[in-house]
Every structure is written in C-alpha cells, then in structure tokens.
Image 1 (cartoon, rainbow, N blue to C red):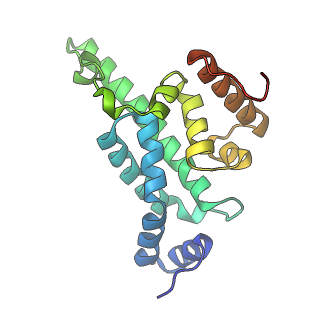
Image 2: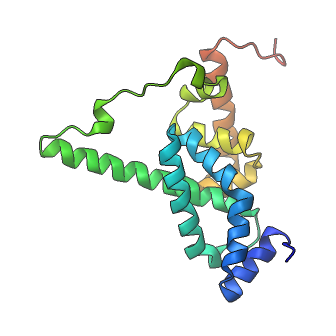
Length: 183
C-alpha cells in the first residue's frame, strides 16, 4: 500500500476508521510531536506520555481536521493543548496534596540535569516563558509558519510575530548576543 499526503490518510481514517493509515500518520509525525513536547516539558518520559495522549486525542478528533492548514500544525495544537491540560492537572494535584499536608515529589525535588545533557537550545529556551517557548519551538524546531502557529495556539498572527520577536530579544539580552542585522 502506498501512502499519499496527510489529508488523504485523514480522509481514509475518517471514512473507514483505517487504523493502519492512522499508524502511518503517527509514524510520520511522532518525532515532531515528541520533540515539541520535550522542549516544552523538559522531561523526556513525561513528553512521551503526553505524545501518547496527544495521538489518542487526535484519533478522537480527526473528524474535526478541515484540511485548511497543515496536519502537523493541527496536531501540534492538540499537543500544546494536551501539555497545558497536564500542567493544570499537576498544579491542582500539587495543591490538593499541599492542602492535606503532603509535598508533591515533583515540587520537592530540583530539576537536576547533567551539564553535558543541556544543549544551547535548552539554555536559550529556559529564559523564555512557557508560551514563548512553545511558539519558538513551533517556529524554529518544527518549521511552522506564523499562520500555522496562530491556528495551533488560537492567537492572532500579529501576536505570534510579537511573541517570536520578544522571545528572540529575551534570548539576545540574556546571553549578550549581538544582533548582526542591527549592529
């Protein structure tokens, strides 16, 4: 069986619940989704769990993909939403534990990473807010257009451009990087 474009696979899946076609979509896009979630969460195993959740949600919502944007843009919107929902759940869980007198393990341990495991990109992303980090990863690591990022984040295109500009400025300032265009 030869596989066509993403939108053709989606049509097959929606029409006849073709799990092999969905498997092909996962194969094509899982590394983008996992890498995106790893950069957002900073935790490889959590990112893998979130990616699984993302693909399960994508299966359930596939009928809502209109084909107007790229499939990966649509998929990263689900991944971003999945990430935000997990953050909300973990915050509520930590609050509940705190109320009953426990300190969550995640809150009590520090994020310890071996120095050689931290890439320059990770250092740059660490100075950004969660939203800035997500948008910068979508733009530079995933190669999405401003319009696709706008669709994925439900932000106006102008806001996406502003966040990217501010994110780059924050990185330049934090690491004393000279802008070659401006001096």
